[in-house]
Length: 260
Image 1 (cartoon, rainbow, N blue to C red):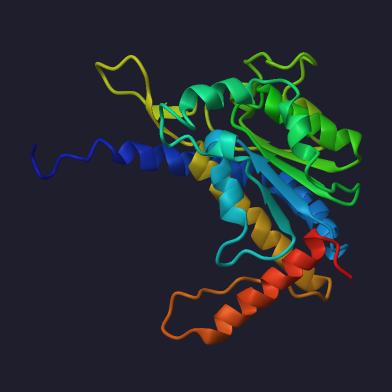
Image 2 (cartoon, rainbow, N blue to C red):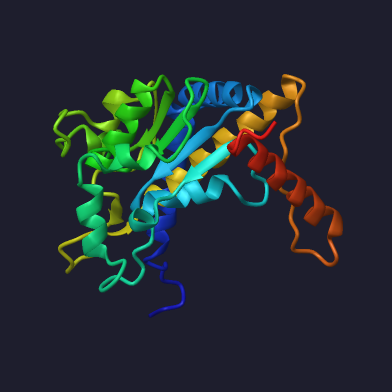
């Protein structure tokens, strides 16, 4: 291959930049609205619960706990819906596909958590059609939570729901942030292949997450409260950072278990 020939794979970065620009051009107001309700939840010492299944757990893990994240965001990552790296055998893809389509499972998952009308439920789903996601959205609404959805409107609007309600995630949520990724998720066509490669949803989800979380931190400071942020511990002898994280974990635990 001639050295001057463009790397074919760079097309994914170009498509990714198109998505990020579209998010910036079309989703700012929706992200600001989401950040406002999340700020209210955290200032009330309540939670922004974050839920996703499959690869939509990636944005949930990006939020908290991690460096730059802060107390107030509560990840819900059900193991059977988030760990399928064995591919086959135990914790395999077949089990995951069955469970994400099992109506009623999402409602059972939420029985394990103390939800409150002051809370926000932030749900990530590219398609927004599978029963476990719809269960979580509907049950959260029933209990009075504000539901924020991050999903692909292009994909979801042309795909029927698998839930008996006939609802898709964007039709349930109070605030919808469109990830602006095209239908099908994978974005790159290669001559000779029937299917596209190079999905865009993880890039879009993580970008939206960091935009919204940054805005929540800004809102909290403007309201006179400093968020409890996890600093990096990956520098030499960063004992103060270790102590800050320990203090943050104690506060997280206090809120989670309602310790007075």
